Length: 500
Picture 1 (cartoon, one colour):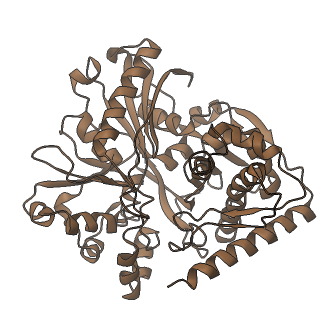
Picture 2 (picture 1 turned 180 degrees about the vertical axis):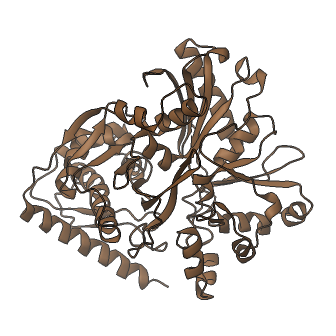
Picture 3 (picture 1 turned 90 degrees about the horizontal axis):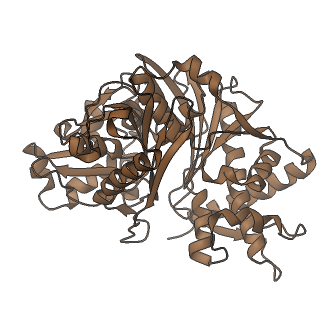
């Protein structure tokens, strides 16, 4: 039996597909960006057909690059941007509206109304989440209430909802399977994370009919096969996980206490808490890390909305760099005598602040502030936010490992940024040899699900470190910088609270 696995990584700004062999080597890849749609301020959408098209095209490209055919691929693993929702008509297989992206803030008022009704505590107890537009439930309700005829079609059984994994499995299997894995389900705000099932009281609260929901499944299993015409032969789908959980798996963070932090469009730090569901006292999220072989592991998660998006802002908004990977080089040239802070609340502030109304701000500007100082402030903002998350995690769960942090994502490739991260968080930062950890996590799930790749222990032993970044900054300087960061965040939050 072949030991090649095809990983599909459907992200917020691009889709990637990678063929891995049993040695976890990238044998061939394809990647495509797709358009972002911003119909109003704070609204973010994708065309679900773009997501599907890029999945097919990048998968074919990866297979061609690797020189493998469908019969040589043991399984497909899927990982995806979470919380983003797609709703389609079962009769036609076509979306009824553009996908509403996790970054979208259009349902902030809906969340505020539910919060005012005093139900936030119940929602948090069952889902581990905070009432925020970030999650899927109010997005689903918005589509049902704002697309003409959607509620009537839902009542008639004609509509299907899914996160992006659901949409891709539905399309890959020719409409044969309508499923969602437990990690994506846990981000909808409709799933009770203790039972890993849809919760009737939450469905009633958000006015979401159960008939449109997919079947909740574990992270490995038989999720159907692709249509033969797609890739020149049928390929079984054997693994699914949301992107941050897939990165945790790809980093082999299987032991309670291990922490990984992924730097993509946003930044997401996950702490494995094992079988224990830890209720956060510091506005972190309790989420399902994975369910493998019937065993559930949970995680504490801190979500930062803007990480790599700050670098995109430098490139596309300000035009001070022409390529994202040049931000570290520019930051290294910054004037050491200037301390500039960027609070990148372009779409609100995530954990541990959770203020959807906050907006970005710059502090410490002088006449000498230029592109290098802005680049440094943008990259440092990610480091400061990571420190905030780790501090909150350790307060919530003292068993969190304080000896190292495993990192991945596009920004992790920048030596300057990772060294600055180590300096600011004050612990060693470990970057793995395999940088594509999100795709690798999906690949391992599929390979293990197809019984051609090793178990958790075997996979963990294969993890290799590329570089360890050790803090060089003295504690006094670190604390001074952190105090300035906290003052900047406090001022930003205070400003947002006073706006009409």
